[in-house]
Every structure is written in structure tokens, then in C-alpha cells.
Image (cartoon, rainbow, N blue to C red):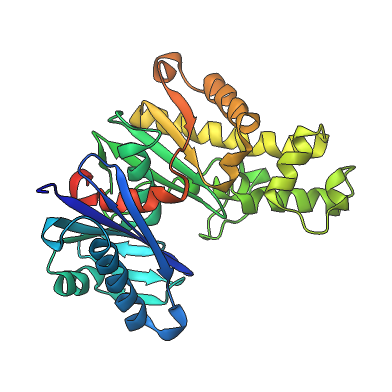
Length: 316
């Protein structure tokens, strides 16, 4: 076989996931091993090397066919210099990871943040397949994002483009402080954390809701209660959806993407959430800017990160 392959690395605090992709973005093989952050930075880097070599050795491909390795990290990255400035989940601080891995592999290495590589994965071979311009929102503990323009990640001047969770959308009188230190960010209302906070606030106020009976409120419980007709839960879900739709309207005015892709745990609420987001987007967006635009669910799930990381050499 003369086909080139690319390996993507998704570095998490608990596990390191690696995968082989071909030049069309097809995920051919995956492997996962423990990160072992407690053993220190050197041990984590050793594990990255070990797992990448292992997956290639166990595949039908040779090391010579490996055209490049890409890696996604949660944290602050200097993408151009290949340095992890701060990744607290794995204990990295000012680690020149690209240079280290290129020396160990003898192959080109590219890095990016986890939200960008997940967006690229979806754009390359997931919900945005065949689309040149799309924007991905990842709804989890926070709100992450990634922007794909002309089929490639848009990183911005300092590599910080796509921080969609920090678009200011909540009016001052309703705004609370975000973890970033600013007020009214999308992340405060449309993440799992934001949804849980709003539910706990409602219970603390004494609002009549079935959520008051829950031992520990989760975002899923809020959505389940809303689907069952709980008015308080419905109000919370509608608020989260409203500000998502509002942020998409703003993004559409600037970038005019063909597709908005929504992934992450919160997106599993399905049409109950998506229909409300689409309705808000339609109400707030000028008709020419919403014409032909789709709002869809991500398709790759936990594989988006490794697919996107593998695609960094072809689509960034």
C-alpha cells in the first residue's frame, strides 16, 4: 500500500485517544490508553509516543506511510509555535510539545485546541462533510467552538478564534460573571453548568418544579423535566436555546456559514432543544443571512477530536 495515513491524538486528563485516518478523513482504527498525569509531564509525553507507535504497528500500514501526527489539547496553546502554554487537565505548562514529538517521531506534527480539532473533525467527515464554511458549538461543561472557512480551521491573530462561549449575549441586568471574568457570556446560560445553575437557583427561590425532588440536579434531568411539561424546566431550556440562537444570529452576520453544528453532551437533548434554537435563529436573523443555513447535530461523538487532529495536516 502506498496510501498516506495521518494519526490524530486527543489528549484528555484521564485517557489518550489515538486514531488513524486516511486522506479522505475516514477513521480506520482507534486505540485508547491511560494518560497517567500523576506520573508527570514526561510520562504523559512518553504515553503519547507509545500509543501512536502502537496503533501504527498494529495496523496494516507501515511507519513510512505515516505522513503526519496531529494533536488536540484542552487549554491555552500557541499554535504557531507548537507550545502548550497551560493545560491544567494534564499538568502541561510552557511545553514545546510539537518540537518534542517531531524529534521522537521523525514526522511533522501539528497541534490545536480541542474545540478546533473537534470542529475540523465534524467538518471533514461528520455533520459538515462536503461543506466549506461551518461553525461548530460544543455544549458541555462550558461552551467551546470552532470556525471552518473554505474547509480549513480559522485560528485568528492569536490562535484564539472560535471562543464562542465567550460571546456576550445576556443583558446586563440578567448577566452573571463567567469563569473568564467577564459578564453575560453565552457559557453562563447555554452550557451544562449554566443550565444546572439556573435550575438550582429556581429551586432555591422556591419555584414549583419537580427538580426540587432531585438529589443532584443534572442537565439531563432538566431536559427530561422540560419534556415532561415542567414549566420551570421548560423556561430554563428555552432560555439556553434563546441565547444559543441569538449567538448564532450574530455569528451568521459576520461569517455567513452554511451549517451550524452543535455537539457535546447538552446537544443530546435532540429536537426539543434544536427546534427552539432554529426558531430563535429564524426570528433574529435577517432573511438573506438565514437562507439555506442549517442547524444540525454533530455526528462523530467522541471520535471528532481524533479525526480533526489527524486532519490538521490537510485542513489547517
